[in-house]
Amino acid sequence: MEENHLIKNYLSNLTQTLEKLDHVALNNAINEIVDAYLNDKKIFTCGNGGSALISSHYINDWVKTASLKNKKKFRGFCLTDNIGLVTAYANDCAYEVIFQEQCKALINPGDLLIAISGSGKSENILNAIKEAKNLGARTLGITGFDGGDVIKLVDKYFLVNSFDMQICEDIFTMFGHMMMKKICNIQRENKI
Image 1 (spheres, rainbow, N blue to C red):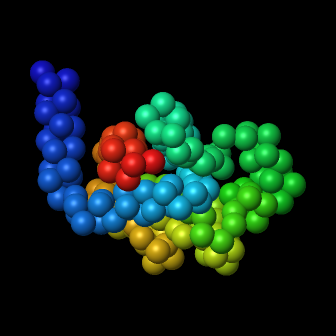
Image 2: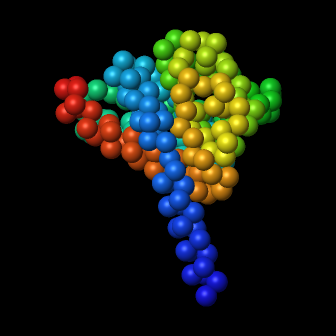
């Protein structure tokens, strides 16, 4: 009986959160990525914990989909994927700069940093956003809860207005899959 209650509550919470999503912000976030892609800009992702894995999942899906569906390359990179580099910066500098230092080395003006943060308060994410902006890159926040400081710093954001981390992560993953579907249609829409 208790398991059925758990399932019903979880699915009800997910459904209610999905119904409250801001479709304009969702569309703007997708278009920010499309714009970077069509303009041959590099697209970087980063996150912590589950968001780190989601940021890796995004790049996996988007790069593969573009290479299979379009002639145009998707120049995507996940800042969490080089565990040696991440731990070197954490050990030799500070955990708070693991993404910021990679931004210094990799980001050019006009590139896009996608910062994924459930709470919007992670120092290493905030530092990466600040560094990317200093370097002339565009910034997109994918965040939950109340958006924290992320939504105050980024150029555009998509907010999952929930304080349930698992619901946020479910919808972050859905966002990545929506973007993947968009990439599938880009060749037809833009003749690339």
